[in-house]
Image (cartoon, rainbow, N blue to C red; front, side, top):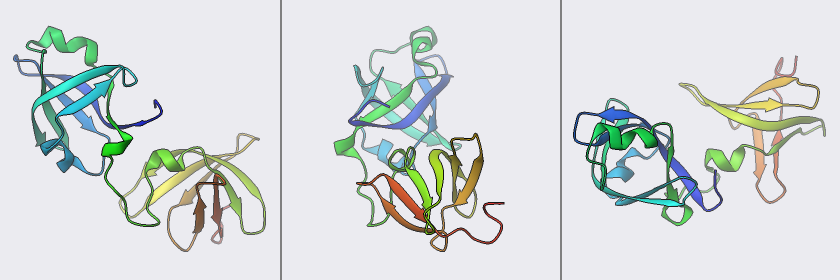
Length: 168
């Protein structure tokens, strides 16, 4: 992800014959597309004007200016659509974007280093941090208040209290 941008969608396929694109949502705030008039692609190097947007079946259909056929859309397939950080939704205290969590080191309250957060899984009840250690050991940490005690972005550390059986 280029610094200064957040991914909000990924182009999946053309939609129809008039240059619309079907996109996978990469945001928890899909309503943003009702007011977003500009997106970026190619690591922020390419500016795209949004003519219209509509939410559909867990995704978003976009009509981008200058893309008027299925073939014009082809080069965008698979690309992430970005917004500047300055346009990000303001989150409540102690709530974080995934890109802020991925890459943080995870330590137990006893001082054991477990590794770094490599990805986040969305489950029905709560997110799960996939943590990989130096010895290729993978630990799944439920992102719940009883386990995750502190997230310190400045130090780059998540402090956890492992529940029974979590660490094997």
